[in-house]
Length: 638
Image 1: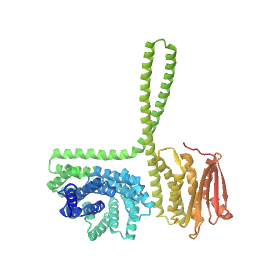
Image 2: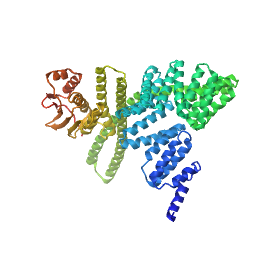
Image 3: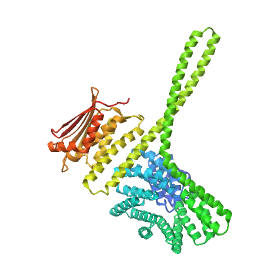
């Protein structure tokens, strides 16, 4: 080994890898790796392998990974580091750090428009929020995740997001609906032979039956989950199984078995050093001991749970712990401590109630703030016009009364003061306009998310519909909702909050339809000639829905028996008219087909928009089908 290589090895071993928490075997292996990418890959693999059994070591390895990425100026591996940090921080109960890491990962892949990675991280964020009892935020994240997974036909992702949706519905006391989604997740997991997800699905089903007070059914599913995790030696999953079984035994009055499960779950959680699982199992163990009149042991466990900042307990867990401590202290005659815990119990109960109320009024608050800001902008604009009028009058007065240098000096001073006042008002107006811009983006984002949620619900509902006609209607409804959601997505992502670039929007819309009907690009070719015009929302929505209906109709009917063909979409502006044409070189329409089309819901929808747009409609069946609309009523945006 030459001198230069020796110096480099000493530098890396002394600077990058010196950490008493990292085993010497890992440090030695790192030193012998030649390239930065090989070091990054090795640290990524090692950190994930220790994520559950030793999360603190896993974080130490990620810290070294960050050092190598920073020193080498590498982008490679940075996103994986963000994601692993988010998962491990969540497992350690460090929720703020976890959310920050997940947001870093989300921003990284949103810039790359990588939907697969966005689906993964929004699912992780849904779990993070639900661990804290933030049901509204969790529902928002899991809905976005489900939509992204469905767009990619990702079975595993659909299993996980459907199971999470069922879990949240259980928390909202919609247990019958929750069972539908949990059973869907279970059946999908079984069909792809994924035992880890199958275990989670059975655990979720057991939890829902427990909420329905069907305890025997709950026990059956908890035991199935435990059997799967025992076979796979999944200690993480076993902590959940043992703790859930312990809670269930308490409800069934089997206190000895409850204590057995609680002790076993707590032992495994401490063994794998997972802070949030230790807290989860310790809460149950403390409650079981107090219920068996072992007050000293139970009080010690629950006090430790509340006093240790590392546990980061949710409001619900803190409330339950204080209630148990109140009963324990009351039973042993320590009235002061009993009263203190009772007071904390009531305070936290009020906090949970207030949190629920906050979620319910959130949309009303946004609407109120938006209207308030708009009114403030109007008032400021009126003040600006009044100020300009005053300046004009003052200039006339200065011109007519200019009789000397002294008077001129006085008037110039007043003019300067007025100018400063106007500049201050303009700054206020600019700030208010920026706030309005932010609010409008948030509104469009929420509308987009709500439309995606509706689309997801339609998709989930379609799985339980056997009638082909109803299934087609649900799919068509889902595509219409998606076409509107794309508009609001474009609005909050672009600088122009009132206009849509039609060319980009049509490309996304048609690509979505080809994906929805599972059309291979080599079978049906799409030709687009779209003039790049900006239209306002009221014009784009009906035009987008018309294109949705016409392209869908061609995909469904023009090329039977997997025939090849071409669909053309054209839009251009001529003589103050928008000329929209959708054509295909398929079978074409005979008289009966045309009569059927004109009686369909899609044609009625097109006809309604035709009136709204003051358009002329022409349908031709030569060499396929061509539908042309000449639109007279539309509004462009600069």
